[in-house]
Structures are given as C-alpha cells and as structure tokens.
Image 1 (tube, rainbow, N blue to C red):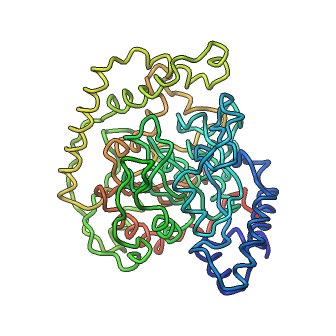
Image 2: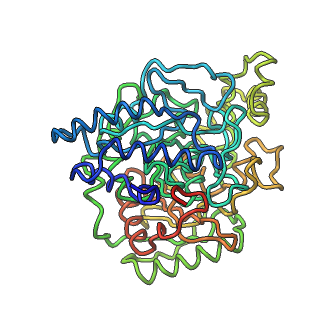
Length: 472
C-alpha cells in the first residue's frame, strides 16, 4: 500500500478492508510506522512510538482475521493515545519532567475500550505539560508543529493527537478537553473532533478539574468519530460522573439530518474575530442556510462572559502542586508555575462561590437552548500563532489564564458540559484551516454529529491536505 493511499483512508475504511481480506493489520501498522518515519521529524506529534509492540499485536490480529475472528469494529486499525491517558506498562509522562519515569499500572477506560475493539496503539501523542494550556509545546517534548505550516502552533492540549490525524500517520486518536483542548487543535490542524457531553466518555484518573474535562476521539471523518463514541460511551466505576449509555448507536443515527433549529453566531461576548476567519465563517453560514435542511433562528445571545468563573476553576487545579520543591518548580513550564503560585490565593469559600456562579451560568445557557437545537459559530477567532509561543504576541500574561483570552469561544462550553464540535469550514488567506464550532444541548450528542455529517458531505474538506502529509 502506498503511503498516500494509506493516509487517505478513514478508520472505518481500514477496518472494512481488513474484514474483506484486502489488507492486513500488519500492512496497516507498517504503513503507519512508515508514515511516522516520513513526517515525524518535521512535526513532533509523538512522545513515544511503540513499533515492536505494535507489530507484534498486528501479527496476532492478522492471524485472527484470517480465521474470520474479529475483536471489534476497529480490528487492526492503528491509533494514537494522548500522553495524559494511562496505558498499563507504558510511561505516562504528561509532557512534564516531573513524570519522565512514571509507568502506568492500569489502563484508562477509554483506552481499554478502544484496544478491545481491535485497535493497535502505535504510540503516545504529545501534550503541553499536564494539559494546562492551549499551545503545543512542553518542557519535556519540545515543540509540536502544525502540519499545514510548521512555523505555526498545532494548538493544545491534544496537540500531537490532532497532528497525528492531520498528517495521515493514524486515522484516529484519543484526546481530552478541559477548556478547548480537543477543539482548538482540531480547528488549527483541519480535522474533526467533538467534546462530547461531560462524562459521556468516562475518564480516569480524574482531572483536577473533573467538572470541566471531557475525553473523546479525534478523527478525519464524522463517521469515524461516531463509531468510536459508540465504543467509548457508558459508565465506569472509576469515574463517578460517568453517564449510562445513551441507548443509541451514534454511528447508526448518521444519515438524514432532522429539521434542526440553528443559531448562526459570528461571535460571542463581543469578541473580535480576525477578518479573514470571519469571512470564511460567513461563507460557511451562507452555505448552511442554502444547502442544509435546517431552520435558522434569529436570536440574541445575552449571556455574560464566564471568563472569571473559568479562571477561578482552572487556576484552582494548581493547588495540587503547591508543595513542589524549588528545584521542581524550576523544571516546569513557567506559565504552569505561575498558575500554581496564583492558586495559593484562592480561599475555600471563594471556590464554592465560583461553583455556584457556574451553576447560574449553566442554567442561563440551558434555558436559551430551549429555543434552538444548535449554536454554530467560529471555533477560534485567530489564526495559529508561532509554534514556540503560548499565544499571540499581544497575549496578556498577567491574566489568571492567559491562553483563555485568545480562545474565548471554547471554555464556556466546558463550564456547561455541552457537546461541542470543531469541524473544518475553509482555509484562511494564509492557507490555514478554519474550524466551525457546533454546540448542542447537553446529552444531545447525536444532533451535533448529524449536523456535522451533513456539513462534511456538503463541504468535503479532505480533498485538501497539509504540506506535511504521509506520502507527500
């Protein structure tokens, strides 16, 4: 199989070829490893590649396939796992020099389920230190670069997971999102990801901000995502928030788009949007209104910007690291160190008041959504900035969570726990992907997926590939 042919395949297509006997898991894994060898030096998507382990698993899966025995929907499909997820017997370094030798003694629920479906873990993907920011660099891994322009950031914190899908080394990865960490890199790298309803996918170990952090797939197609969510959904005893199964197959609900009521919002909270991005989004809005069977709802969203609520909750997580020795503080990301220092000023009563304020904000959003089904808007209001940076040049480092200021449309929906997706809708004047954010009511993940599948069918973003792409 030629590399470019491999890189163009979805996970669903790969699995179908394995079942039909047209390609073997061994071939797929070798193609993935070849693709990594070709692209990795330019983008740095992987914190570790497990070539021999992956090959050995592929041999076993190939024997099973020949015997017409398949473990699940992704039998033989190569995947990447964000290096915040535990995999027993493998290091979980979290992008931090503090955890460089940390070996997991158990496996996270989502990884267990993905591997049980027959997937092959090719490697771990990079993340900024402890997933604390939305840029793509860390003290341990260095800089992860955008495959569309390697001088630019890939976004974060699911940096490597987005790049690994975008550059064609694997069709599917796992990521996590506490303030935009799946959607921002999906937007910057031109792939699809949905932050599902909070606790739809169980997480373990729990994030310090468990009331904000979602886990889920990152893919090149909505179909791949929907099938993966079928595999990952359902409760796990290790996550006390985890939801029961939705009782539906998200994959089977794709197809005809029901008559959904959509609000098309060019911005939120009055935030400025880069003119080039605004023009791409406006064009997408026109296409949606003209070609998708939806009802456009004209309404004004008068919610207050919940940035103070997010600041307080995000900074509070730093208290868990407040006892670090000075020599350890010197080894961590300077921005993370500032957050840890700031967390010491948060009083317990302040924290509980913040949780009450979050509940009030969530109620106002939920009540607004009674008048419509989906909110569609820009994902990120700026283009990707320099790969080595934490944000654009004018980012205010004195703010409690500086990176949240340049991604003002992501964190509100971590506070509410709603499903929110990023799906490509065009390319900026610089040739960089632009993402459209699609937000649904809490628990209505299938509606977001149905809309995104309809948009994907209309727009077809995979016809254009990044400059760093397996097979050239």
